[in-house]
Length: 73
Image (cartoon, rainbow, N blue to C red; front, side, top):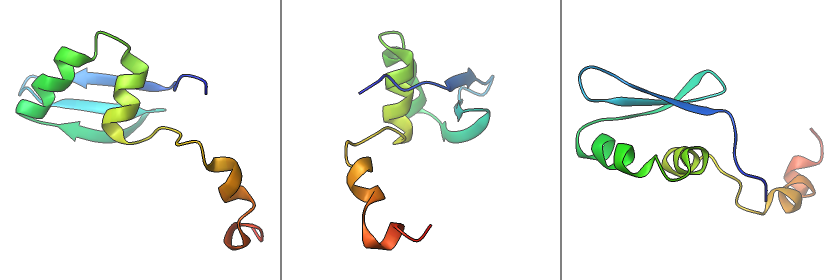
């Protein structure tokens, strides 16, 4: 599975952190969650941001494409 890409984050003056994906706001973290994120983001930023936003591949995309509900689109 390739590493996620397109994530960035901005730390605001009030201590909150805004994580964006491809230029759109994905989530805003405040308080203790923002501090925890900032301490963890140095290891592998793209993967950490994908995990915190819940926007990462789960391995079942190929199966979902062939599901009857998704065939007509």
